[in-house]
Image (cartoon, rainbow, N blue to C red; front, side, top):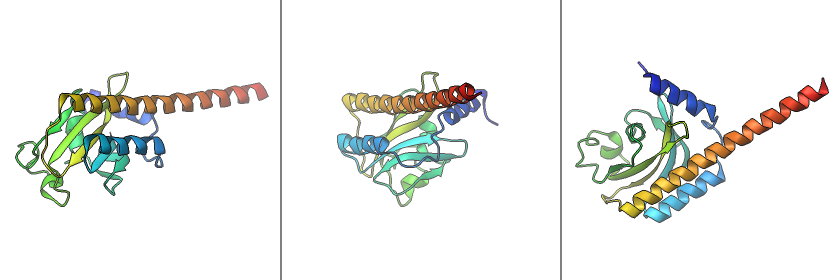
Length: 176
């Protein structure tokens, strides 16, 4: 059963009308930049839906979504802090995860939640490597900064859509 907070988080996610939208160059630029900054092969902007983790942008991996369970992003959105797995094959949180034991062979995962002004974590920006590593405090700050940039993009998109709807409504009212 969904908690009240989770139901409100999902409602907030849907408000942005981003799920299942086409690729967007601005988000692709962010994941490409994240891959370069952190020197990792994979960087993803995710949105955590009720039963799936949808990729708004995925650099270095050819996928559009994965199931919410066993996705690491589901765990990452439970906190407002960076979620880090430095050595996935030794970490009890991830030992049985198919993304670790399976074909991806994930070893390092770091994610910053995409937190809205209302306080809901819609998803993450995450960086992934197939080798264990640590995240420096400076890198943690940069990942959080990238998360804020993504959320700002979401907010600008929402405001733009609301403005268009408002203008269309006024245009229709002026015709009457």
